[in-house]
Length: 290
Ligand SMILES: Cc1cc2nc3c(=O)[nH]c(=O)nc-3n(C[C@H](O)[C@H](O)[C@H](O)COP(=O)(O)OP(=O)(O)OC[C@H]3O[C@@H](n4cnc5c(N)ncnc54)[C@H](O)[C@@H]3O)c2cc1C
Image (cartoon, rainbow, N blue to C red; front, side, top):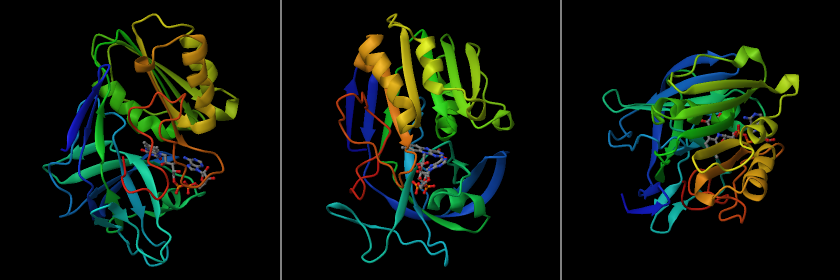
């Protein structure tokens, strides 16, 4: 670990950059549209950080060549990550859903879609396939002391949401909004005594932002809001919380996890309306995976 930053109840720890090639151990179907892919291998250190409330901690996957299956890892040099010359690497963010140091296994949950290299890799993945893995570059521990947490996610942030439910303080109320394509994508989530779970269906026209905004008309001083989903869809949430509901910066954390029509979407760092401390990604081609 290199340094530690504390900001309004949110801690940030950074780690040196690491690159490894891992192997798919097994694939578990979670729903028609999502699979858990468990990876492992000699290069996976048992000290990989997995911290309570580090719900959005993520790695960057280096997607193999779709024809040969070969993994071209970037070189980690003194100035960070150097991409191999002449190869157009697809590097994408995925949440660390689970880590079992004894078994040497890391669990990643993928949305199955065929619009991009990571989605296509996940659709075809089978035991023995190889994948590159960078990071995690840091751990961001979400705040512990709120009476109520409002968590909003689409399916890409469902892995982080499951971690929220499993790791949030037991005395808190958890209002969780999850937007999925349809009822077939609803599945059993971890349990929490204060959980109020609201499934929303894209195909029925449900709107994630509308639901969240109705749930937090104003800042009562005891609510924390975490929202991650398609970038355009969470913009109204961020705007409402800051400009209408008057939420303090430290009580909200809103991220665009992907953007419709954009390959390898990266959130801009330090966007003025983005109260980000964690998550998101570095600019495309940058040296450090978050
Ligand atoms: C911090 C963080 C954590 C994340 N964790 C997860 C995770 O655990 N599981 C997960 O599945 N995703 C996760 N994502 C989202 C994932 O990184 C993006 O969906 C990524 O764009 C997928 O890469 P791709 O190569 O499949 O598509 P890209 O090459 O990036 O995009 C190609 C096309 O596919 C579209 N597209 C991208 N994602 C989707 C999607 N989910 N559904 C439909 N169309 C899509 C794009 O709009 C674009 O038009 C996370 C993102 C962030 C920032």
